[in-house]
Length: 222
Image (cartoon, rainbow, N blue to C red; front, side, top):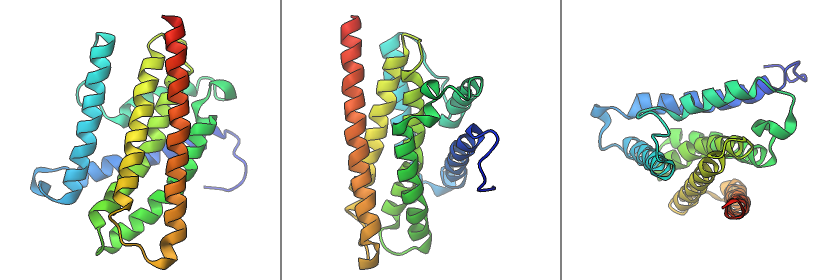
C-alpha cells in the first residue's frame, strides 16, 4: 500500500478494521475446532466467544428484542457499520474512524499486537498469555469503533449499545493487563511493556469518562 496520501483516505481505515477482523476469523478457524479442545488457544477463544455472547444477551434483555442474530460475528456487525459510514466519508464529526478515542485505540493496537504475535510465535515463555494479549489487542479497536458509531447515531438505542461496547473494550483491556503480569519479559522488552501498560490504562481512563458522560446523558433524558 502506498505511503502517499490516498485519494479516498477512509478506505485505509476500512482496510485496517477488515484485516483485524480477518485475523480474528483466521484464529477461530485454526484453533476453535473440536480437535483443538483443551489447547490454550481454544480456551482463550472460548473465553472471548462467551463474553461476546453474554454481551448480546444483556443487550437483548435490556432492549426487549434480539439485538444480534445468534452466531453473528463481530466482523459481520462491523461490515454493516462500515457500509453505513461510507455513505458520508467526509463528515469527520459523524465518522467514528476519525474519532480520537478510536484513533488512540488503533495506534495502541498497532504497537501491541505485532509484538505480542511475534513473541507468541517464538514459543516458550507464557505463550498462552501472549496469545491472549494478541487476540484482545486486535479486538479492542473494533469494540471502540462500534461504540463510537452507536454513540453518534440518532437512534434512541444507540447509547445503550455504545455503553455495552465500551464496557467490553475495558474488559478486554483489563485482560491484556492481567496477562502481562504472567509473562516474564526480557530487559530489552521493558520499554514496550511500559508503553503497552500505560496505553491500556489511558484507554481505560478515557473509556470510563466516556461511559460516565453517556450515563449522565441518559439520566437527563429519562
